[in-house]
Image (cartoon, rainbow, N blue to C red):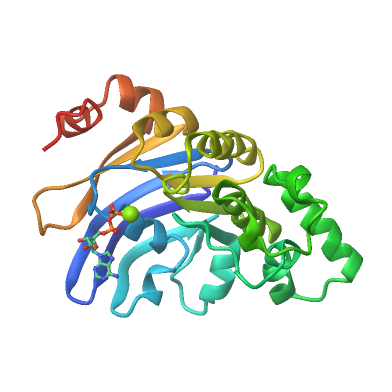
Length: 258
Ligand SMILES: Nc1ncnc2c1ncn2[C@@H]1O[C@H](COP(=O)(O)OP(=O)(O)O)[C@@H](O)[C@H]1O
Ligand SMILES: [Mg+2]
């Protein structure tokens, strides 16, 4: 069976600085994969190579392959904008468009993508807000600015915006690190629901979170300061947290790192 994501020999640079080296992994459809590892080992960089956001940074370039359902995202003639529609992203800090209403925030991507009738747009916005477990909290104030919501609500609004265009994959870079514990649990529950429809890859510095939400966990590490980050191992989450194959993983998850 085709993998949803199939990465081989992926190396990424910022100018002459090699940030990550020779990463290969696969991701199954409708699963949650967590990326863990110390700060600076390239988790965010790698995540951004999966929807061609890395190259938006000046000097950002990659070598290697990323296949999405067997299609090479870096192949000739592939439009990075369409890649980012298929592989959506949610960031560390909730970033709703500040001057836009809640409705327009969710509708923004759809409006870019084509001709929706107003009623259709309303249906998709409602479905997306329901999908992000936010509908009941905002249905009476859809025309109010998104920036008026709490941090946790804003993050769910960003998730609604991301899922509105029906991506295949949702990338999340430490989506809870700016949130309180209750909002964090709400996002974790949501991830459990979203994986029925989407393939999710999440970076987290919180190992309990990785253990709670993910099916597979990938551990990244640096051989030494200044060296590029590498994928050390990827396995079933249960296995990574009980009986990893590599000593460095064991050291990291048991807090003996460094
Ligand atoms: N915009 C950038 N320009 C130059 N170097 C960067 C940039 N972003 C990250 N890096 C470098 O890439 C490496 C990996 O960083 P990053 O992907 O942010 O790691 P992590 O998310 O695991 O903390 C680090 O050496 C970092 O300094
Ligand atoms: Mg990061």
